[in-house]
Length: 475
Image (cartoon, rainbow, N blue to C red; front, top):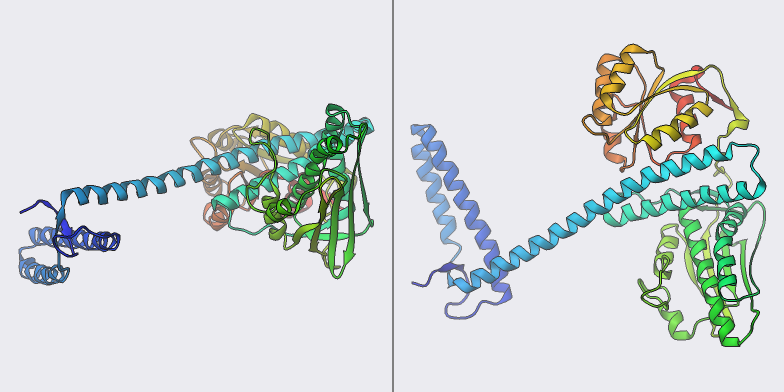
């Protein structure tokens, strides 16, 4: 008899792919029956009275096995089947590993963005800043918000964040003004590098136009469209043999049929019909493979659709230029614009003793200064053990703690605080996704969870909500 594994196909013929798939199912069923037989034997050994029951079970299992109608296939086919199984398992393992690595990168990016965001905010509190410095810091602040949005998109791609973007009312004119400030350095560099006279970027938008969107995602879209226009200028200058070349980019936004209609137009190189048809295909690019690329128009379209909008090419012609158009949701009247909390509308009632726990020194340093700007007396700890000691030695009104810390994470620390200091408000800060943490809040004694990078307003609102009259008030 030829050694091999069971096979329910025709004898003497090579197995087809369908046969192999059926065979996998039969092997799994046979393994299940074997496990059940072993379990029955173990039960019989433990109880002699179960022998009769075991025989009955084995008889039923034998009847099930006979219905498989099995025969034999060569050992070589067994090797192929096992190899296919192994390769499939390795593919799933690699995908899982990449997702874990990407989730780790997203977590670290949130921590870095927390430090940058806090440092920029603290710098902006300086009333002696010159206008240019203040403008650059505001651009950095906006870039941080846009980067946070990119991290959220990364998390959605890898599946660690299944939430759709939260859409809020945004003042369109303010956003466009901020984008132009942020891109100004790049357009000046391009003009200088390629000998262009200038690249002028201007906008036309009514003051009170409000779009319903996500700040970071919308910023990324407009930045990338402007960046594409800037990069099209040197080719246009070369094509027209027109130096010094004057590059013009115009962004216009207006209300149109219950939507915000936005166009980005330029006098760059333009696109032929074939390029226009391919422009929004994922990973399509007209740039050289060794050149750095932005999001790509495919990703830009994806973001716009996530924001419940539409995007297309209204006009483009080689040597003349391009107009890209977008339709975005108009913010309803009842949807209020966000009102950032700052030191002009903050009333300090009494210094508030706060314990701040984080193993990242930069995050501790920056966030403690922000809390001090809110009127808190801050004591810091780098780990859960030190935090518990400080709670026994001093009186605090509130505890802020990071989630991911060595030895004792934020949830365990909060549970310990719940036991030793019942009623103490604990705010958990995390660079990870929040839904699982929210489910565990009551169990571990967590009062609130906020995700990094958090803002000055987030901390101020939490102080007002959790400690009431002892804290800073808004308004």
